[in-house]
Length: 198
Image (tube, rainbow, N blue to C red; front, side):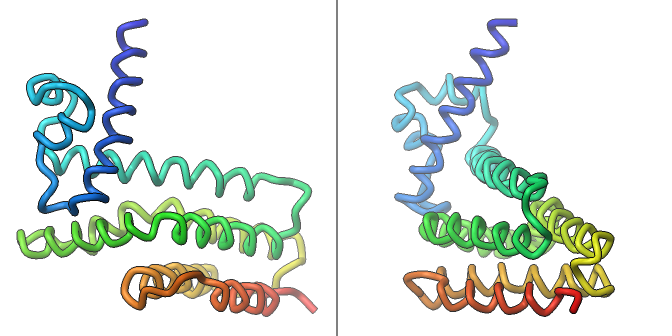
């Protein structure tokens, strides 16, 4: 049992350090050797944990998203918040995470372009990674409707509407090079208010 725990701990450390290599060098220029060097291990040992750099990158992103999901779920499960506060707090948490990880967004976009060049549909990869986030947003809307805090709306359409703000945030930070998302935060407050039952 202790060996499995140590293995998982080491794996997590590798993922954290590998992410810094991807951020520093970009997906295509990051190599297995650079990752091993940053981790202070040999390539042979790195192969015991991961089969290639794409697997390392995928797991690094998964770990990053798990941490984000924990924060978002804590907000969703906070019984002291009404639905409007929950939805705005979830978006503010996401926006802050995106602002703090602007460089990572560029690497993810680089990776998605790499997949497209390799003949892999990047949309499918993105869809798999965001399904939990879409579920959280939808569940907050459903909860708000049941509590009488939100108007009755089409859940899927509203989920798509709210998710489009996240796509906009990524575009503004990674492509337009905006410094922050303060304007988008104001729009979220307005949009959440529009859901409120009057």
